[in-house]
Length: 290
Image 1 (tube, rainbow, N blue to C red):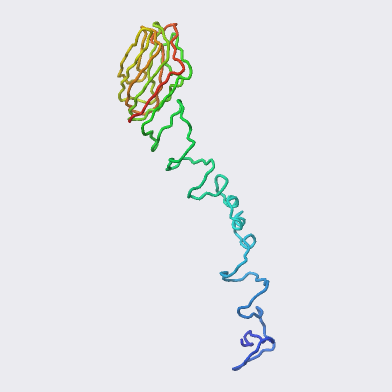
Image 2 (cartoon, rainbow, N blue to C red; image 1 turned 90 degrees about the vertical axis):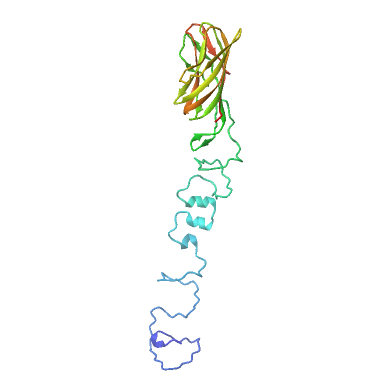
Protein backbone atom coordinates (compact mmCIF):
# COMPACT_ATOMS: atom_id res chain seq x y z
CA UNK A 1 0.00 0.00 0.00
CA UNK A 2 1.18 3.56 -0.47
CA UNK A 3 2.91 5.28 2.43
CA UNK A 4 0.38 7.48 4.22
CA UNK A 5 3.03 10.07 4.97
CA UNK A 6 3.38 10.89 1.28
CA UNK A 7 -0.23 11.05 0.27
CA UNK A 8 -1.53 7.49 0.71
CA UNK A 9 -4.62 6.57 2.72
CA UNK A 10 -6.15 3.59 4.49
CA UNK A 11 -9.41 2.26 3.17
CA UNK A 12 -11.72 0.25 5.44
CA UNK A 13 -12.77 -2.04 2.55
CA UNK A 14 -9.20 -3.20 1.81
CA UNK A 15 -6.90 -5.70 3.54
CA UNK A 16 -3.39 -4.44 4.24
CA UNK A 17 -0.14 -6.18 5.18
CA UNK A 18 2.24 -3.75 6.80
CA UNK A 19 5.98 -4.10 6.64
CA UNK A 20 9.00 -1.92 7.14
CA UNK A 21 8.94 1.41 8.96
CA UNK A 22 5.79 3.55 8.58
CA UNK A 23 5.12 7.07 9.70
CA UNK A 24 1.49 8.09 10.09
CA UNK A 25 0.23 11.65 10.11
CA UNK A 26 -2.96 12.61 11.82
CA UNK A 27 -4.48 14.65 9.05
CA UNK A 28 -2.96 13.88 5.61
CA UNK A 29 -3.78 16.42 2.88
CA UNK A 30 -4.76 15.16 -0.56
CA UNK A 31 -4.71 18.15 -2.95
CA UNK A 32 -6.11 16.21 -5.87
CA UNK A 33 -8.33 13.70 -4.09
CA UNK A 34 -7.74 10.00 -3.57
CA UNK A 35 -7.96 7.83 -6.72
CA UNK A 36 -7.11 4.19 -7.33
CA UNK A 37 -4.97 3.23 -10.32
CA UNK A 38 -7.04 1.96 -13.30
CA UNK A 39 -10.16 3.49 -11.78
CA UNK A 40 -13.55 3.44 -13.54
CA UNK A 41 -15.50 6.71 -13.38
CA UNK A 42 -19.20 7.18 -13.75
CA UNK A 43 -20.24 10.50 -15.32
CA UNK A 44 -17.17 12.39 -14.09
CA UNK A 45 -16.66 16.10 -14.81
CA UNK A 46 -13.08 16.07 -16.09
CA UNK A 47 -12.74 19.82 -16.45
CA UNK A 48 -9.83 20.69 -18.78
CA UNK A 49 -7.17 17.97 -18.65
CA UNK A 50 -3.59 19.20 -19.05
CA UNK A 51 -2.93 16.21 -21.34
CA UNK A 52 -4.44 12.91 -22.36
CA UNK A 53 -4.50 10.11 -24.93
CA UNK A 54 -7.89 9.55 -26.59
CA UNK A 55 -7.00 6.39 -28.51
CA UNK A 56 -9.64 4.22 -26.83
CA UNK A 57 -12.24 6.91 -26.21
CA UNK A 58 -15.68 6.42 -27.84
CA UNK A 59 -18.96 8.28 -27.93
CA UNK A 60 -17.60 11.73 -28.84
CA UNK A 61 -20.47 13.68 -30.50
CA UNK A 62 -19.32 15.46 -33.68
CA UNK A 63 -21.90 18.23 -33.53
CA UNK A 64 -21.06 19.32 -29.97
CA UNK A 65 -17.79 17.62 -29.12
CA UNK A 66 -15.53 18.96 -31.88
CA UNK A 67 -14.73 22.63 -32.32
CA UNK A 68 -13.14 24.49 -35.23
CA UNK A 69 -15.20 22.86 -37.99
CA UNK A 70 -16.52 24.96 -40.89
CA UNK A 71 -20.20 25.54 -41.48
CA UNK A 72 -21.96 22.32 -42.43
CA UNK A 73 -18.92 20.08 -41.89
CA UNK A 74 -20.30 18.45 -38.74
CA UNK A 75 -23.59 17.77 -40.49
CA UNK A 76 -21.74 16.17 -43.43
CA UNK A 77 -19.64 13.99 -41.10
CA UNK A 78 -22.80 12.77 -39.43
CA UNK A 79 -24.69 12.24 -42.72
CA UNK A 80 -22.25 12.19 -45.65
CA UNK A 81 -24.69 12.88 -48.48
CA UNK A 82 -24.02 14.83 -51.68
CA UNK A 83 -26.36 17.58 -50.51
CA UNK A 84 -24.54 17.92 -47.18
CA UNK A 85 -21.17 17.94 -48.95
CA UNK A 86 -22.40 20.73 -51.22
CA UNK A 87 -23.49 22.70 -48.13
CA UNK A 88 -20.12 22.18 -46.45
CA UNK A 89 -17.77 23.26 -49.27
CA UNK A 90 -17.35 26.95 -50.08
CA UNK A 91 -15.88 27.03 -53.61
CA UNK A 92 -18.21 24.65 -55.46
CA UNK A 93 -19.60 25.12 -58.94
CA UNK A 94 -22.87 23.65 -60.09
CA UNK A 95 -25.45 21.69 -58.11
CA UNK A 96 -26.66 18.12 -57.75
CA UNK A 97 -24.71 14.99 -56.82
CA UNK A 98 -21.01 14.51 -56.11
CA UNK A 99 -19.09 13.22 -59.16
CA UNK A 100 -16.21 10.72 -59.17
CA UNK A 101 -13.90 10.17 -62.12
CA UNK A 102 -14.94 6.66 -63.18
CA UNK A 103 -18.03 6.52 -65.43
CA UNK A 104 -19.94 9.47 -63.97
CA UNK A 105 -23.35 10.48 -65.38
CA UNK A 106 -23.53 14.24 -65.90
CA UNK A 107 -26.74 16.21 -66.50
CA UNK A 108 -26.43 19.17 -68.92
CA UNK A 109 -22.80 19.94 -67.99
CA UNK A 110 -20.91 22.94 -69.36
CA UNK A 111 -17.63 21.29 -70.39
CA UNK A 112 -15.82 24.44 -71.48
CA UNK A 113 -12.84 23.48 -73.65
CA UNK A 114 -11.72 19.92 -72.80
CA UNK A 115 -8.01 19.22 -73.31
CA UNK A 116 -8.91 15.82 -74.78
CA UNK A 117 -11.84 13.50 -75.33
CA UNK A 118 -13.19 10.53 -77.30
CA UNK A 119 -16.62 11.06 -78.87
CA UNK A 120 -17.05 7.56 -80.33
CA UNK A 121 -20.25 6.84 -78.40
CA UNK A 122 -21.68 10.36 -78.28
CA UNK A 123 -25.16 10.99 -79.67
CA UNK A 124 -27.33 14.04 -80.20
CA UNK A 125 -24.98 16.01 -82.44
CA UNK A 126 -26.80 18.83 -84.27
CA UNK A 127 -28.01 17.99 -87.76
CA UNK A 128 -25.97 19.64 -90.50
CA UNK A 129 -27.81 22.04 -92.79
CA UNK A 130 -26.78 23.75 -95.96
CA UNK A 131 -25.81 26.85 -93.98
CA UNK A 132 -24.00 25.00 -91.20
CA UNK A 133 -20.39 23.80 -91.31
CA UNK A 134 -19.03 21.49 -88.66
CA UNK A 135 -15.40 20.64 -89.34
CA UNK A 136 -12.67 18.75 -87.48
CA UNK A 137 -10.33 21.07 -85.59
CA UNK A 138 -6.87 20.17 -84.25
CA UNK A 139 -4.94 22.78 -82.27
CA UNK A 140 -7.19 25.51 -83.62
CA UNK A 141 -6.80 24.56 -87.30
CA UNK A 142 -9.47 23.01 -89.51
CA UNK A 143 -8.22 19.64 -90.68
CA UNK A 144 -9.33 16.69 -92.77
CA UNK A 145 -11.54 16.47 -95.85
CA UNK A 146 -14.98 18.08 -95.70
CA UNK A 147 -17.54 19.97 -97.75
CA UNK A 148 -19.36 23.26 -97.30
CA UNK A 149 -22.62 23.86 -99.17
CA UNK A 150 -24.60 27.09 -99.00
CA UNK A 151 -27.74 28.17 -100.82
CA UNK A 152 -29.08 31.46 -102.08
CA UNK A 153 -31.79 32.28 -99.55
CA UNK A 154 -33.19 35.49 -101.07
CA UNK A 155 -33.53 36.43 -104.72
CA UNK A 156 -30.91 38.96 -105.81
CA UNK A 157 -31.77 41.46 -108.55
CA UNK A 158 -29.46 43.85 -110.39
CA UNK A 159 -30.72 46.72 -112.53
CA UNK A 160 -28.39 49.31 -114.04
CA UNK A 161 -25.72 48.01 -111.67
CA UNK A 162 -22.35 46.45 -112.52
CA UNK A 163 -20.99 46.55 -108.95
CA UNK A 164 -20.44 43.05 -107.61
CA UNK A 165 -22.41 42.23 -104.45
CA UNK A 166 -22.77 39.12 -102.26
CA UNK A 167 -25.40 36.56 -103.22
CA UNK A 168 -27.51 36.28 -100.08
CA UNK A 169 -26.73 33.03 -98.25
CA UNK A 170 -23.63 32.21 -100.29
CA UNK A 171 -21.10 33.89 -97.99
CA UNK A 172 -18.76 32.90 -95.16
CA UNK A 173 -17.12 29.87 -96.76
CA UNK A 174 -14.10 28.97 -94.60
CA UNK A 175 -10.77 28.70 -96.37
CA UNK A 176 -7.71 27.32 -94.52
CA UNK A 177 -4.14 28.20 -95.37
CA UNK A 178 -2.48 25.74 -97.79
CA UNK A 179 -5.82 23.98 -98.33
CA UNK A 180 -6.71 22.62 -101.74
CA UNK A 181 -10.41 22.89 -102.68
CA UNK A 182 -12.68 21.89 -105.52
CA UNK A 183 -15.84 23.92 -106.03
CA UNK A 184 -19.16 23.76 -107.84
CA UNK A 185 -21.32 26.86 -108.37
CA UNK A 186 -24.83 26.31 -109.71
CA UNK A 187 -26.75 29.50 -110.48
CA UNK A 188 -30.42 29.58 -111.44
CA UNK A 189 -30.81 32.95 -113.11
CA UNK A 190 -32.19 35.12 -115.87
CA UNK A 191 -30.53 37.96 -117.73
CA UNK A 192 -31.08 39.64 -121.06
CA UNK A 193 -28.55 40.20 -123.79
CA UNK A 194 -28.54 43.87 -122.76
CA UNK A 195 -27.50 43.59 -119.11
CA UNK A 196 -26.11 40.08 -118.97
CA UNK A 197 -24.47 38.85 -115.74
CA UNK A 198 -21.11 38.13 -114.12
CA UNK A 199 -19.97 36.07 -111.13
CA UNK A 200 -16.85 36.34 -108.96
CA UNK A 201 -15.33 35.41 -105.61
CA UNK A 202 -14.87 37.99 -102.84
CA UNK A 203 -12.02 37.13 -100.43
CA UNK A 204 -11.82 38.32 -96.82
CA UNK A 205 -8.18 37.88 -95.69
CA UNK A 206 -8.08 34.88 -98.03
CA UNK A 207 -5.48 34.86 -100.81
CA UNK A 208 -4.95 32.16 -103.40
CA UNK A 209 -1.86 30.49 -104.75
CA UNK A 210 -3.72 29.40 -107.87
CA UNK A 211 -7.18 28.92 -109.32
CA UNK A 212 -8.63 27.21 -112.36
CA UNK A 213 -12.32 27.44 -113.26
CA UNK A 214 -14.56 26.60 -116.18
CA UNK A 215 -17.95 28.26 -116.53
CA UNK A 216 -20.93 27.09 -118.56
CA UNK A 217 -23.60 29.65 -119.39
CA UNK A 218 -26.86 28.16 -120.60
CA UNK A 219 -28.90 30.18 -123.06
CA UNK A 220 -32.02 29.52 -125.09
CA UNK A 221 -29.92 28.47 -128.06
CA UNK A 222 -26.79 26.86 -126.64
CA UNK A 223 -24.01 26.87 -124.05
CA UNK A 224 -21.33 29.53 -123.65
CA UNK A 225 -18.12 28.11 -122.16
CA UNK A 226 -15.44 30.22 -120.46
CA UNK A 227 -12.19 29.36 -118.70
CA UNK A 228 -10.09 31.39 -116.24
CA UNK A 229 -7.00 31.03 -114.06
CA UNK A 230 -7.13 34.53 -112.55
CA UNK A 231 -6.96 34.17 -108.76
CA UNK A 232 -7.23 37.81 -107.62
CA UNK A 233 -10.06 39.26 -105.55
CA UNK A 234 -13.33 39.76 -107.48
CA UNK A 235 -11.81 38.52 -110.72
CA UNK A 236 -14.56 37.34 -113.06
CA UNK A 237 -15.30 33.61 -112.97
CA UNK A 238 -17.93 33.95 -115.69
CA UNK A 239 -19.31 36.96 -117.60
CA UNK A 240 -21.80 37.04 -120.44
CA UNK A 241 -23.70 39.82 -122.19
CA UNK A 242 -24.28 38.87 -125.79
CA UNK A 243 -26.99 36.31 -125.01
CA UNK A 244 -29.83 35.95 -122.56
CA UNK A 245 -28.74 33.59 -119.79
CA UNK A 246 -31.03 31.14 -117.99
CA UNK A 247 -28.44 29.30 -115.86
CA UNK A 248 -24.73 29.14 -115.05
CA UNK A 249 -22.56 26.33 -113.72
CA UNK A 250 -18.92 26.82 -112.74
CA UNK A 251 -16.53 24.07 -111.67
CA UNK A 252 -12.97 24.51 -110.54
CA UNK A 253 -10.08 23.98 -108.19
CA UNK A 254 -8.06 26.37 -106.01
CA UNK A 255 -5.11 26.35 -103.64
CA UNK A 256 -5.32 28.73 -100.69
CA UNK A 257 -2.30 30.79 -99.68
CA UNK A 258 -3.60 32.71 -96.65
CA UNK A 259 -6.70 31.50 -94.82
CA UNK A 260 -9.90 33.46 -94.35
CA UNK A 261 -13.42 33.46 -95.78
CA UNK A 262 -14.97 33.69 -99.23
CA UNK A 263 -18.29 34.85 -100.73
CA UNK A 264 -19.86 34.39 -104.16
CA UNK A 265 -20.85 37.69 -105.82
CA UNK A 266 -23.07 38.73 -108.73
CA UNK A 267 -23.75 41.80 -110.86
CA UNK A 268 -24.82 42.84 -114.34
CA UNK A 269 -22.05 42.55 -116.91
CA UNK A 270 -23.28 45.72 -118.64
CA UNK A 271 -25.33 48.41 -116.97
CA UNK A 272 -28.89 48.29 -118.29
CA UNK A 273 -32.43 48.85 -117.14
CA UNK A 274 -33.26 45.22 -117.89
CA UNK A 275 -33.19 43.23 -114.65
CA UNK A 276 -30.68 40.43 -114.11
CA UNK A 277 -31.58 38.00 -111.29
CA UNK A 278 -30.18 35.12 -109.23
CA UNK A 279 -32.89 32.91 -107.79
CA UNK A 280 -33.41 31.12 -104.49
CA UNK A 281 -32.09 27.56 -104.71
CA UNK A 282 -28.83 28.51 -106.39
CA UNK A 283 -25.97 26.95 -104.43
CA UNK A 284 -22.20 26.64 -104.06
CA UNK A 285 -20.23 23.70 -102.68
CA UNK A 286 -16.56 23.76 -101.63
CA UNK A 287 -14.83 20.46 -100.89
CA UNK A 288 -11.46 20.48 -99.15
CA UNK A 289 -9.45 17.65 -100.66
CA UNK A 290 -6.08 18.23 -98.99
